[in-house]
Amino acid sequence: MEFASMKKPRDSQTSRKSKKPLHFRDEIRTAFISYAFIPVAALFVLITLCAGIIWSVSINRKAEGDCNTICAVLEEAVENYMEKAAELSGRSNTPGTMGATGVEEAATGPDINRMKTDKNLVSEAYSTLKEFVRKQSIAANFAVVDNDFAVLLQGDSSQTFRIPSYQKEIEWGPLQRMAQNPGNAVLEISHEYSASALDEIIIGSAVVGGSGEQNSGYLIFAMTGKNVQDALRSISSPYVITDSFRNVFVTTNRYYLDDMNRLSSDYRTENGAISITGYDAVYRSDICGGSLSVYTIIDVSQMKKAVITLVLLAVILLVVLSVAMFVSGGKIAADKTRTIDELVVAFHDVEDGILENRVDIRGNVEFQTIGEAYNKMLDDIKRLIAENEKETKAKYISELKQLEMQFNPHFLYNTLATVRYLVKLDPDGAVRTVVSLSELLRYSLNSENSYVELAEDLKYIENYLAILETRFGSKFSFDIVVSDDCMDAVIPKLIVQPVIENAVKYGFEGVPSMRISVRAEKAASSGAQYSSAGESQLLLTISDTGSGMDEETLKQVQSLLSTPENATNHIGLFNVQRRIKLLYGEKYGLSVESGQGKGTVVRIRLPYRTASKGGRRDESNNR
Image 1 (spheres, rainbow, N blue to C red):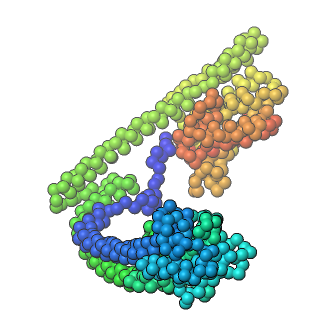
Image 2: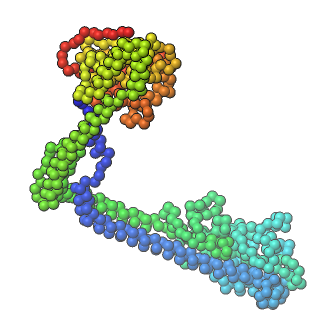
């Protein structure tokens, strides 16, 4: 008896390639490198980080310090000018405003209407404003403009203050905003009032005349970029001052500007934040409620080059040390793990099913213990495999016996019912039927032989068909055709009977009569669907002219035959397929072809084997 192999072949090479765990040798080498190399690498990393931190802190301090200095100077000057402009507007509650006489009086601004005709008043106003500007950290030009936009006085003749010609026709510019915000100083960057069209910080307010009339004129302070740069000569870092729209008021280098005279987007950053742009560090701080922004820019190219050089040197040294450590570490690890490698090879042999190679390890006590345990494991595995094979064989034999002895009780009931009628109608036929049935049952229940020659099995199959013929009368017929070289072929007992029983059970539905044909022939291996090359096969074909199966039912039957477990009540064909698989393996089995109204053909493929040499003549039985 043959059994399907329970051990699934394993491609050891594929299994090993799918996973590549770290070898103990590599772990030792890694540990050696770690203890010797990582501290050095950590030191270099620490030095590099410290250098980077020191560089970052120094850059931040320089950029932020210069920016804060610029902001302090500029914000102080702007606030002073704005307070003075509000104070002299004539609407301030602050006592001591410049009155109609050009000296300080309470709650009135300069009487601009009188200044048009009184030169002394103009002179006094000029002196007062000039003295105020002189005391500021950033100088500024100043001007008094009447309500018709005529300049009555200005502080610096070299910085001509002019009113655009369109000012009267168009409500535009700082003067218009001063008129719209009486009592409040206005701050704006503009070039509208500069004869040389230079950007200026315009600070001013509308002024109430001595008689209390509204907006008799305007008091204006104009701070140029040169004024700011003169006050910030101590600042060595490049800087840019812009308004809230990034329009540049003053810069020490036009490289930072775009084509529209605005700060380039590369140098814009958040308020109070520093950012690195190329080889520049940029710091920004807003003043005057966000009306002005100050950017300081620090060149970090030299520091970057120094840091990059340091990092490259560290990398080169680390590479050299790595090569040295890997070479020496590999040699040390190989020497220390030679015994482990022997054990690994031995375990791989076990993986591949080689259980004969024992190990003989000498040296360390620990490895000797492992070697002894490995040898004991081999002995235990061999013993367990032998026991498992015995249990598996016993299980298969038990299942085969159970499958062999399954005989459909409905056939017995129907046959006995037929005998009951034959006793009255045809006593001789009843006797023949009972004899045939008893021989068939005795043959089925005989457990001495599971394999029989095809000729012997067909004799009992013929008895079975004769019983069916007696039962169905003229509605049933059969024929058996077996080639001469197949008569002595050895097959499992009653392997054909369940197929015939299944054909009779389902084939009679919807047809008046049915004929069953049984064929046996020897097939070459080249035409075998299941057998391997070089092995002949026995082909048993059972066909009927019954009702057949529709496509859906055929698919269900084929699906049932392809599964190892049967969860349905249909056991006939499944039991045949299961017996063949258990006896001969997956290469053999049965196939089913059918069509609605076209009958059914079942082909059983078995390995061709004989118990003895010699052939028998063809035997053909037709009824």
